[in-house]
Structures are given as structure tokens and as C-alpha cells.
Length: 294
Image (tube, rainbow, N blue to C red):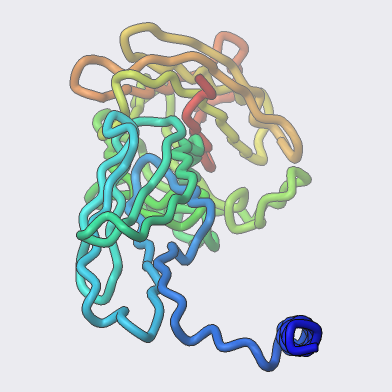
């Protein structure tokens, strides 16, 4: 009888224990220990840094010493900072894994890391009327050039521009466009009298020597017989001509230009071969240039 009672009591205790575990509110989880990264996947641009933070349990978290590492240091490096955080510095486009662990090696956590490169695009408006972002505004050809121009995301770049072959001046005629750009970009321009100044131009600096660029030009003059030839010169060069007469919707494109060894591209403008305007007017309202996809 004693053995039967013992079995019965043992089964009853096991049943009671099972019943108590079925209710999550009754489970004591206060002794759990963990470390984890606040982002299971991290995506970042090649030209930016990122900060990640590790969460730790409240039981022993204050005493944890954390170590950070990256599986492939050819893609990125990582350095721990205050408050269980770490700063990631990209090295090259690619994918790898971030690891955080306690100094004793008993707790660890992993996150995927992807380093990408979004091609930069730069918008430059020429003339007295400022255009809104993402445009950079170059108001007068006699002004100092622009440096650290903003890209399409509003972030500073290494790109700079300056006039290196003079223009006659700036011209504003209140002309609109049908290209989806603000009218402030089409109603004013840098221009030249092609008889007095046969060639005008810019020097673009701070370009990447390992990257090819595409250039888009827009010119709009309310005259007759105008045409501008745009010549972009780096290690290679390209030329395109644009009729500027009442130009509401035409642009020209020059692709695949490589900067020279100093990261410089020159842009020359002159009257096009079909320019029969009495003063051979030519010019540019705005330029959009972008890094080509690899």
C-alpha cells in the first residue's frame, strides 16, 4: 500500500508541475542571461559609418565586457564604444556577419551586414534664381566655385565645380520647362556671346577615378537659330549638341566619361555647328551628372 501511495503522490506532483508550466505568467524567467544586437540585419552605404547597440539582460548586464568582431574584415571593421555600442566602418561593397560576445565567450549574437553603394547624382542650377534641393545653385559665373556639393539624398560629396573658361554672364528670361524640373532651373542660365567668347567651360573636381559618369545638359534660350555643343573631357571624351530655341523638353546626354588621374573632368561649351543666331548665343541652364552603375 505504501508503494501505491508513493506512486500516486509522485504522479500528482508531476501533474501539478506540468499544469503550472502551461501558464506563462507563472514561469520565472528572471535568471535568463543573454546578449543580442538591436538590428538582426544591417545595411549601410560604402561612404558612411553605422552604429549598432547590444542589449543585455538586467541580471548581469552591467558587468558584461563585450567584444565585437566582423567575420570578413575586407568588407568592414567594427570598434566598440560606450554603452554597449559599436561603430561599423565599411571597407568594400559586400556581405559579412557582425558578432558580439561576452569576454568569457559564454554568450554571443550575430547580425548580417551588407555594404552597398548607391550611385551619386548631382544637380547644378546656373543663374540668379535658386532651385530647391536636390539642386546646388551656382548664381553667377564670376562667383567662386561650389565645393562639397550635395547629392540626390542631400548629403555632402567631394564634388566641386568652378568656371575655368569665362562666360559672358548670366541671363534670366523666365522660361518654363516640361521636364518635371522646377521653373527656377529653366528660367535662368550662364550664357556666352559666341562671337566675343567662342568657348566657355567648367572644371569638375573630386570625382572618383575608378568610376564612369553620365552627364545630362539642358539649355533654353528664347531666340532663333541657337545651338550649344557640350564637350566633356576626362581620360576619354564625348560631345553632344542641343538646339536651345524654345526648349521645353529636350536634354542631351553624354555617357561613360572617366575622370583624369586627378579626379577632374572639364566641360567645354561653344556654338554648335548649326548655330546661326546673330551673336551665336550658347549656354547652360542646368547639369545633372551621376555615377554609372558598375
